[in-house]
Structure formats: C-alpha cells, structure tokens
Image 1 (tube, rainbow, N blue to C red):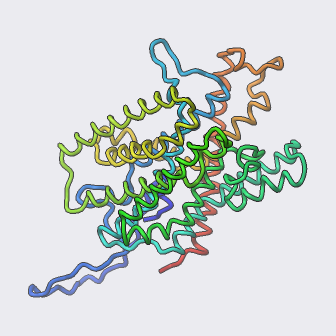
Image 2 (cartoon, rainbow, N blue to C red):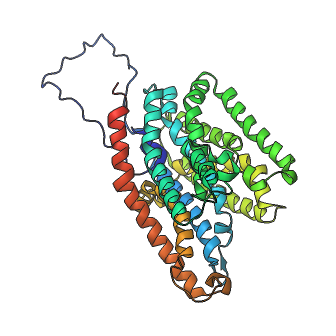
Image 3 (tube, rainbow, N blue to C red):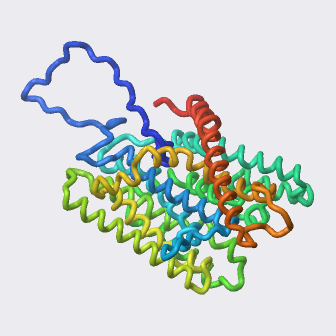
Length: 429
C-alpha cells in the first residue's frame, strides 16, 4: 500500500502481483502448526474494516479543500451564500480553519501503516522510503508553482529589489517560508504555500515521532499536545504585542493537531482488531459523526462572535482538532449511506487533484481579478458595487480554471514526476 495514496487520496493502489505457484502444493501435516510471520502485505479489509484504502478519507479531504477554496473565492468575489431563509455564510467565513483538518488527515494517513505494524505486525515503510515518497508527492508540484509565481512576479515588477526577491524566494525553496515575514505575510509568490512548509517540517520529524510513539504512545501523544498547547498559550498571552497573522499558524501550534491525527489512526486500527462490523455500532458512529458536524457549526458561530477570529484559532486549535478526529473516526465506522456521501467517484477525483487544487486556487483567483477576467468598466471592482452578475461570472470562471489547472498539473506533472522519483530512489527491499 502506498503512503502517497494514504496521505493525499485518489485511486486505491493495484494489489501487488503474486508469483505463480506450482500446480502441486506441499501439504502441512496435521500435527504441525503454522505460525503467522511478519508480512509485507495484507488484505485491504480486516474483519470488514478498511485498513489501507479508507475511501471516506477521500471525501473528507476533498470537502475540506473545497471549503478552503470557497473561503478564498468568497474573500475576492463577496458573493454571499444566502437565499431566503438559508444562510450558509458561516461556511466560507470559517473556511480557513479547515486547514487544521488537512493537517490532521495528514497525520492520520501517514501514521496508518505504522498503526497496522503495531497492531497487526504488517511491515511499514522504512525512513528512506518514507522520505522518498514524501519528496515524490510534494516537491515537483510545489517547486513548479513557486517558480512560475517567481517568473510572473519578476515580469510584473512585484519585487522592489534583488534582496526582496531572494528574501521571498529562498525560504520557499527550503520550506521555511512560514518563519519569515517577507516570505509569509508579505510574499509576492503564493500565499497559501505556508501550509506546505508546515507539512514538510512535520515530514522531517515524522519518522522520529513514529519511533517514539511505538515505544510509548501515551508519552509521545502528551508531549506533542503539550508543545501545541503551550505554544498556543504563549501566542495568545502575548497576542496584543505581536504580529497576529504571522503567529497564528506557527508550526509548533499544529503539533497537537498532528498528534490527534496520529492518535486517531492508531485508535481506529486498534478498534478493528478481532472485531466485525455490526449495525448497532454503525448507527452509533453515524450519530456521533453528525453530532461532530453540528458541534463544528457551533464552534464556527463561537469563532465569529469571539474577540478576534485569529485569536480563536490559537485558543481553540486543540479542541477543534479533537472534534475533527472524532468525526474522521466516526465517519469511517458509520452506516453505508453516510460513507457513500464521502466515498464515491466524484470525491475520489477531487481528492486526487486536491493538492494541486489547493496550491493553485488562490493564486489563480487573484491573477484573474487583477487581469479583469471577467471584464468590467471603471476603477471600482464590481464586487464592491454589489454587481451580482459579475460575481457569479467570476466565481464560475475561477472554479473552472482552478479545477482545470489542478487536473492538468496532477496528471501531466505530479504523477509522472512522482513515478520517476520513486523508480529511481525508492529502496526495493
């Protein structure tokens, strides 16, 4: 099972080809017993539970990315999702906090093979294979996005001087851009790429986190939670005296989110051992999943009434990730009709292009508006004038262009280059 798939969704991998067996197999004498050995592959389903391809995660990732896309589109178009008594304004307005869901899903999916190793004895990827797969999955699409933004920025005169250019570009190349104001809050490249920096920093630490977790799960989890909560408290305590937007998404504050993703994967695999699905369990977890969705809405409402929405993200990051973890685990165990909502062909496709959709959408939205696509007269943007016709045209064009670019980048850049990198560098043993 490929961790590339587990981390980012898409099509389930094809099962490995089994060597041809001779027609006549030696039989085991009745008095002998066969002791199960540590294996490199196992069934995708254990006692009716999915252990490799967890289709529900495709849909959760896809919806999280789509709501983030909606959030950035809403910021630029001002198209309000209100129709009569139906008011969905709270969804895009709080879209930014679903980045935490993406971080949690990354921790969950990356730890899944190691959870299988701990519970079922399945062989998990070694450190070299893990890093090669992360590079193959992230680096080609990311670097191309950065370089294209750099070229366009230079052509448009976005950089004041060479120092400003290098101060923005170089941190992006080493995935440290979220630690510098010039390459995060003041970047002339691509604003959403700060999350890739956070992810890569956790990727570097991940094999060591796994090693500690396998030795002492409770201590490792509590340690990561402590890092997240303490760093969040320090930021919250000094909130009035710091650059709030810069510090709100500090890497350390996500340690508790990642910890809940890891814990969720371990708990899920542990819960599948020596058990089979039953109707009562499925109903219970469906109710729990729906309750988590309702609790999420309550948290969004609380965020909108908080002293500062930015401060809320710092103060409630751990609690939010607990709700996300409960929802993810519950959705996997839920009844079939609920799982089908998240696990279907549309969701699998959206999950497959989700990384490129995420890293390209906001950049494309801004450029389309800068280029006056769709066109408008005057100096005041139509969204500020309440031009509903323009808002709808802009929204539709942005969605078509971003999904189109994400699809092309996924199937003609990301996948071929990822395959090339893995074939060349991934260990064969």
